[in-house]
Length: 225
Image (cartoon, rainbow, N blue to C red; front, side, top):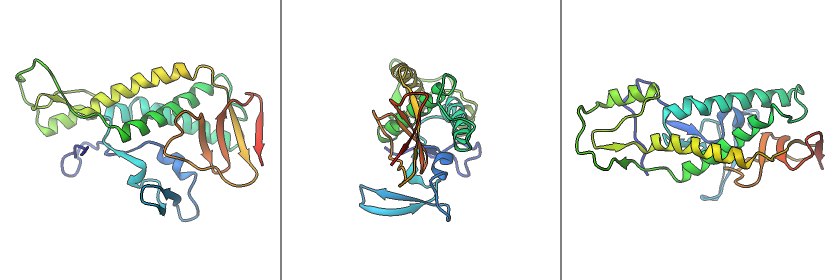
């Protein structure tokens, strides 16, 4: 499905390339030249890409309200926790850390799903006309300020519906993760990899040698051999 391009020059600064796994998280897996090694299975290629490469992104699949609103809050909270784990200030995932990891894991998986299955623009049944048709600039200005709208073609942009859908799915996955007990895994050999998403496997990579994993005793930190 083709994405809706913003106006020339993107005057309202709308996010077009939307990361499923955040840029900051990908950056922790880069080497000295600022690139990550990528195994691109569909093309059977081995690539070296920067964290902002479009391969890691959906293209305006959810709206700006989601991108800069609840998603940013979840990402910011997790990145702060990740840094605390890396520098040793946090050594276990306890009561306060658990919802941060749960939300991040859920968001990553849901965004990966929406990237592969975007929501198409939806017509509004029963509406025959609008009192006033919004210009492209007005539509983008409303989106910038997290306000939904109906386009002159009497459709709601699919990305607006996707933002709502992602929030609803977040609530559902939060309930599913209520029993999760996250542990911190550290490797003394080899490196962890990052897939598009882990789906049902409750794993969150943090660095090439650190990841979070469910089903460990919450008071333990294991070292993989």
